[in-house]
Figure (spheres, rainbow, N blue to C red):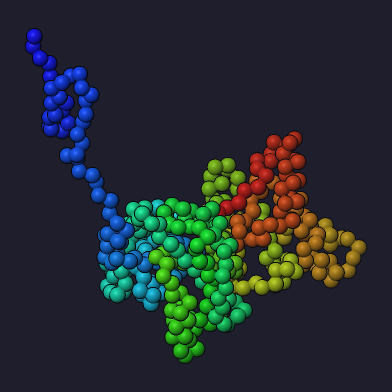
Length: 381
């Protein structure tokens, strides 16, 4: 009687079992296990050193020209600290880790290397791959630099409020970093006149101050710069213009009404709480007015009937210069408008009783009024 053989083939290697009654045993010893690189090997791959120290300037508030200048300042800080600078993504005239294009889409990286020969650079994409490949995830320190409009001194305080913003607003979880309670958050005021060359050795003092306060063993330094609400006004206006143009194309609406505390008839603001009007505010209004025909309570002349009211002219002008009767008129227009658009955080008083009163009224009206197209929308900064 002929004998039977069973044959098992694995990648050209043959094992013959001559006894079909025995349990088949496969020998995998010839398969070589894949070696997992250590964190040190991964570090060497991306930063040519056993230990990596990166600086990621993840968001610059201003538009391209000013963003460019700020980014150069951060490169100088990276050089001061001996950190590799991450070349943050770009797009829509800005620099931010949320943008879609690599840094070299806007800028000449070779020229940057020539200008800063002592600084190492890495693209945001490669930085992201480094963090993904690491077995022990990189620890971080977060730095918020700010200019103080009122205090010329250097101030340091610990601020953990940014933790939630890193995830919700800046989506920092796209990077595989150690974002937990071990992270250090510092808010550093660099003073009102930190960059004023007329202050003699001010720059040297600032460098010494930053070198001391920013010294850290953390592998990743997340850093950003906050100049405050006033400095954002032109950008707020530019983004509002872009939003309104898009809305106009979609809906055909061309009649725009602006409710604002900005002074419309005098140099005094409409609101007594808005007492610090500067060039940035004037620039913001010029941007808006040069883009659209904007109606206000002044241009509509809807309050002219008050001139026949039995009251002295001086008293009437004083009333119109405040936030009383014209504020009520603004509220009526906003409540009944087809669309109601309010500003984002840093462009306005976000949690405003005035705004929420209008929202509540519009929500009630929308139940029986088909002209109410939304309750509230906000343009993005």
